[in-house]
Amino acid sequence: MSTLLLAAGILVAVFVGFNIGGSNTGVAFGPAVGSGAVSKLAAGGLMTVFALLGGWTVGRRVVDTLGSDIVTGDPFTLSVSIAMLFFVGLALFASNVFGVPASTSMTAVGAIAGFGLASNRLNTGVVLEIVSWWFVAPIVGFWVSAVVGRYAYDEIAARIAVRQSEGPLLEFAPRPKLGPNTTMRELGGTALVVAIACYMAFSAGASNVANAVAPLVGNGSLTMNQGILLAAGSIGLGAFTIARRTLDTVGNDLTDLPLAAALVVATVSASLVTVLSGLGIPASFVVIATMSIVGLGWGRATRAEGTTLPGTPPTGVGTPGATRSTEASAQSAAAATGFGTAGELTEEPPLAPTETAATAELYRPATTARIVLLQNLVPALATAAAYIVFRFVPFV
Picture (cartoon, rainbow, N blue to C red):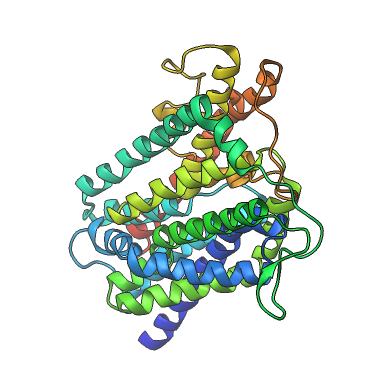
């Protein structure tokens, strides 16, 4: 019986990792695939390698947090672990099927917290620390991006502006060399797009491997190394299969952000997620990325309007209520990172005052409020469902 339960737990963990890989690969490698810098097959391979690297190095701290720190004692039986992963997998499945943005990290923490409440073993100190970072990190992402948008965006855009030439980027016969129409500027810009995508994959692995296997590692069914390998392999499976659809969506169908803006958002967001993962805090790239998009757009708009940066952003932006859980919502609001203009590596000219209205679209209060509502809903439901199941269902 225990062998069957372990097999069931591993299958559910694979299902969770599969969905994580499907969604995160599009977020990370959409611009690189859309620009023709890498193929979908190469994107799947790079996603697998760097997600494993992130999980193997930084992600261990997050596995420890979810697997043993949120709930005191040793309460994770195999059946409890399966039920935990089921809640997370169900949320991801609903997100993929119905297009409702669901936060993997927040849902995982919510399910575990619901179990802790039901069993009177919740470590409130750890939960409060995690939630406090959910407030702080998006605010930091907002303001860093706002400062960049206000004071440094034009220079960044001018430095990385490239136009994609006809023909291959590189030729390898008889030895590696630039393609017939490739410039060093184009090669450098393309390499930057791929490098940022790999960095994002690293941060995704650091934060998300725990969501797939933490309960199984916490109860001793899997060792830490086994859990990380299982999670990374599952993420890779999703990256090579269902991610192809999200790669098309993010890489070709979404043109809200120019290349420079996408790279700023990716760098700020991935850096914050990596730092938080190193601290053992479950965090999502997308919640921070959403507020970084908003902050960058607001910073550019204030520059165009000639206003000073220090001040209060529009209603619903940069406030705890607006940033608390904008997590996996960028997939519907700004396409997770809004990696637009990916189909052509060209940079739009500096923002002019006449473009202020268009830029302001990045931080519409009504859109932000809708995102916040959707982001809070799924984790809240997971927490409530976990509490009810673990409190009133005896066999679980």
